[in-house]
Length: 181
Image (tube, rainbow, N blue to C red; front, side):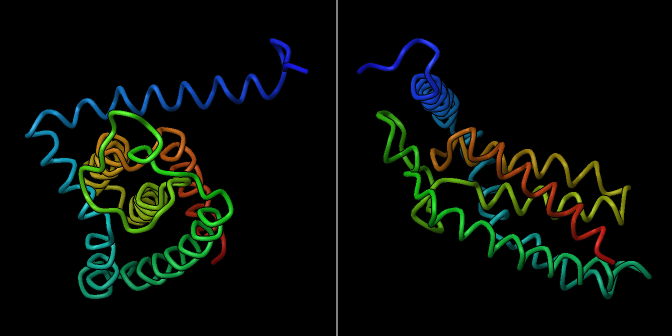
């Protein structure tokens, strides 16, 4: 029996195809050398360098809010790591450079699976936390977070839905940690 036009299976198939098509279209931007260099750099910094540096520096340069912010960042990073690793293993979604013709990995991957985007999850979570404590940093933090998120799709490492879900999770988890203490 074939699925009807309103079946959940057909709707899911259409959604997956749209996600793939959008990943392929956005990946075409990697053909521009300057953009590729910018996004590869943002992705590399989003591996943790920026966030670890902030956590280590905040107690010394962050004023009275430095230690609480750094501690929350540490807690948030650990929670994010556990949650996203569980989800990656559970869903085991192949990356676009594996699943989509014409998409290549423009930089290295930290793990095998695509869903959700850990880089985006961490960037949005840490960005939310940092700007809650230091709103004046928003002009630097949010453009960097946007570059990290965009880099994941353009570099062929994630589907757009991986990035959207990672961003939503990061935002929710940051607000959860902000509400703890």
